[in-house]
Length: 326
Image 1: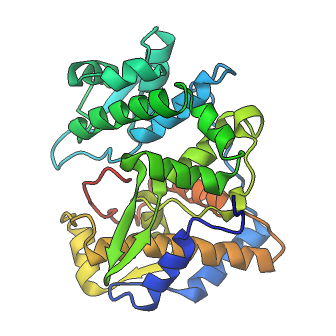
Image 2: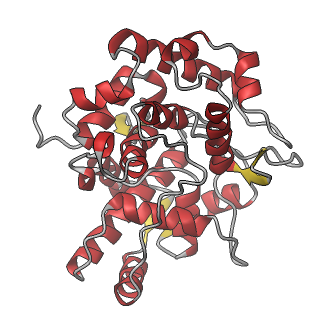
């Protein structure tokens, strides 16, 4: 494999930002963030083992792929309760609800990590798998097809084990993200902007990083070239970057986002938000590097995402796009 290749995400997003009409990046704010983090370096969040399944075997690699096949769109419609899962007598919402639901299922003996079971799973089984104590997880029909695809691909090409795919790409994080996106259509996250394909690969890249986190950089998680991955363009990280003044919306987009009007997938506004997320983190990464801090893009993303889990008085809404890609 040609290890000079990147995912192409950073380059495509930078090109979008040269002609973006609704979103801009404030380089003075980028510098201010880098200065602040230079004096108070942001910690890399520890991997949450309480809510992630891990048994030390190759089955844990399957868990990561299943988790990220479903890792999208948790927010409810107006007036509806948030999807909430109880695990060990504690409620969890959003991504943590998903992680807890899968961990609980595996611990209860549901064959959620078995490729053959996944390939044949039906909607009623997925509804039981993702049952909550309150609310419903959106886009259920897509979650069913995603799990079926994971099962079919693992069973037909990798002897039922995601670890075999990881070994097949030589434990290279970039090649793994590209292989996941190529083999699994549900991970092939690319937009079109002014006629140009813009790869974003949010969930394909996060599979590699989650595998690294799950195995603490050992065994199936001993991936190389993690530094070549980008931020994961979702809806929480741009909300934080906007709060920090790094990302700025024009009046039209600000009005749409702040009134929580849905933006269609692949709308130029949505593509610009996601491209700016990636490009802003790249600028922060570069700024930190010049200040002697070698943070990787995914580590900066993790930190920003964690900031997004904390409520702030000056928070404004995140953009609302119903999509399977984030």
